[in-house]
Image 1 (cartoon, one colour):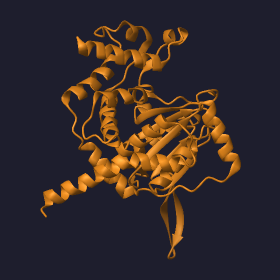
Image 2 (cartoon, one colour):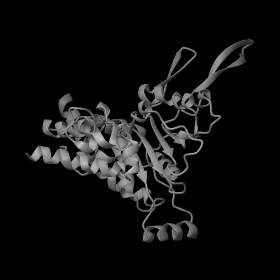
Image 3 (cartoon, one colour):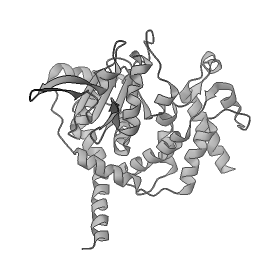
Image 4 (cartoon, one colour):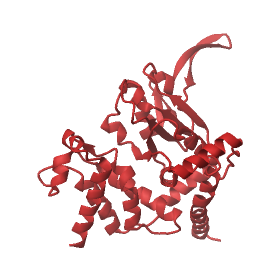
Length: 337
């Protein structure tokens, strides 16, 4: 068997595993999570793509449980960091301490909680910008620097940060530069009545079944490589680029509602993440190519934290979800002309 044949067989098996992963992961998560199908799908896509996620939702909607369960599925090391106003950067990355070994004293670096595979940054907007910025290097470069020395983080590495949208007093909103590092902003809303009844009955009756290890970290790294090799037509890429570009206000933008309601539009990472996430979504649905529907399905989680609406939009009650819907409609109308 030639090297090319072995590589093809290796990738074919990985594609089949990713196709089956959606059902297996959802089956395991259903032991502890009821409903939230779109949320689960977006988190799976982010993990397969190697992206970080911002999770926005009210307290008690199982944000922590969902991330922890996802970690158990892939048998990864999990660390939860509770962000508070007095949290310091060294509390996240680690620090050097003086230790005495073999009769001599020397400075030894003690790793912080960020040295894990899956980091849950709980209520990230409750800590000052200086501590928030400690995550930037780790999220982008996958290493931290302490006293001039770089320390590599374990792979795979993900940051899942949560925010509480209803209690903003005493918080520090994340700057746009840091928000842009997150692949998705996933919204977790309240469940329908039937699902909520099911949750109450399930939680108050028996202990949930333990989550089984479905895959490993090595599998995840292999899946990530396969996702990037999924072919995508230039028209589909151009569609994603046009959606991101349409969100940017300016004299060259012919969309009146964009100039009226948007202060700052999506940057280049938006179209990159739409295409990368669309590749993972295509594989999850058993396709070896990316469709326009894959791009549309991920437009909201990619754009909702990258498009900054102004006071006029807020005063008129225009939500970011409505703006993204109009962007998609406007770009599709332009494409059909």
